[in-house]
Image (cartoon, rainbow, N blue to C red; front, side, top):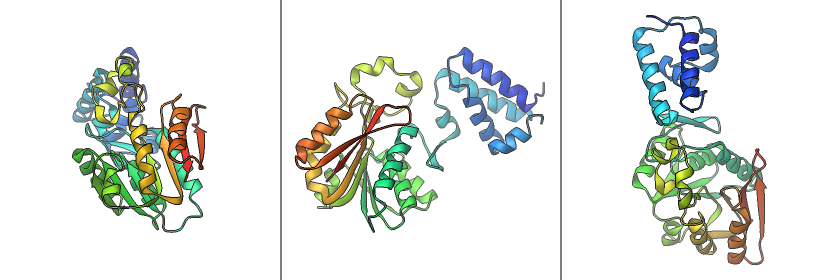
Amino acid sequence: MEQKIYEALKWASSYLIEHGRDVNAGELVMKHVLKTSRSDLLARLHDELKSGQMAAFQQMVMDHAKGVPVQHLIGTEDFYGRSFIVNGDVLIPRPETEELVYHALQKIKTMTNPIIADIGTGSGAIAVTMKAERPDADVYAVDLSAEAIKTAAQNAEVLGAEITFLQGDLAAPLMERELIVDILLSNPPYIPVNERETLSTVVVDYEPHMALFGGKDGLDLYRKLAEQLPFVMKKGGLVGVETGAGQTKDVAAMFQASFPNRETEIVYDINGKDRMVFLYV
């Protein structure tokens, strides 16, 4: 039986609520199936779906209800106004990380031709966005995962961002090449291992654990990074990291220990949670 778009969306909404999933996923899937924009979709609500479109739409909605992230189903996620390819090899970019990028861009307005490093690049969201927003920058993107670098390089190519990719652990590849940077940004894994059971199946079963968990207290990678920073940061430079809520004071203390005479700043996200730490080197 043929269905109108609005009827299919109504079904998806009820089905997703019933399964405890994000109700907005139906619209994202429909836009993907019809290869259309939101405004076009809204104008076409009374159009009838072809049987193939309806079958594809229902299957994807049911897959999401089972736990598959909607971003994996449609293959992309938007970040800072651009569409990034995502898959099971990379962390799906989050809105909180957009805020890290926004604040970093505000803080480096007066810098010219900055050298920027994105540590733990994943999909390349931070590195590609920084290069796109600051074409004068020389950008390096580092990740331990070869698969993540492959995805990030794909995003850089599609979005026309010239970036140097390095494989390795945190800032180690910069140290090996004796690279000194003006700006270092990172969204490292920060979830404590014992919180695994509290995470949604959408996250824990489909996103790379290497990009999620940061040891017993979630702070292992910040400790390591804090030790590396003095070897890779230029004087007058900026370090900016995203953290889990409640972790900023500990991370700021680690950075302060590495740079005793320098200032750190804790920045809250749009939801009022302590989410970012900046270090002025």
